[in-house]
Length: 182
Image (cartoon, rainbow, N blue to C red; front, side, top):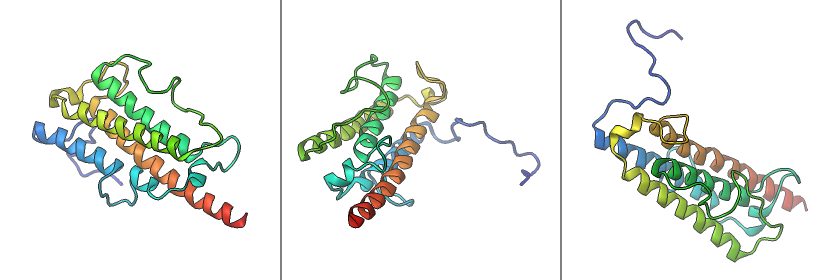
């Protein structure tokens, strides 16, 4: 569909015009809606984990596929990466060694699951604090180690949460159908 004459497409990652303080507040609201505040799109990341059984969290659709447990740690890791890029924290300071995907043990305990949920929560709160501390002028800048603007980095972390919330919803359904079929 052609654009009306005189209207140009805003380049990806550009900050829409607003009052500077409102931009940071809006980004915090976006992060929260994707993670644990009410949102129009259905379950957010924390909502998708509510009431999850250990069997559902540990279930794999195939031996080479990730389970919900691994998705939780993966989401925490990318929140950590966002925080690290915004704050300049040193590499290798994530709670677990490695990067991106972290294979979890085959046997899950309730204590281990609570620990992973706490890691995710801590990563979210650290990211929120880093975003809240931003000077709105930084939103168009690229943080060290990033190929995108601060604005795009933050909205990308939020989109990442929503993406994996959808995967978790699907895995829960597949797991429960698989367990029922026995």
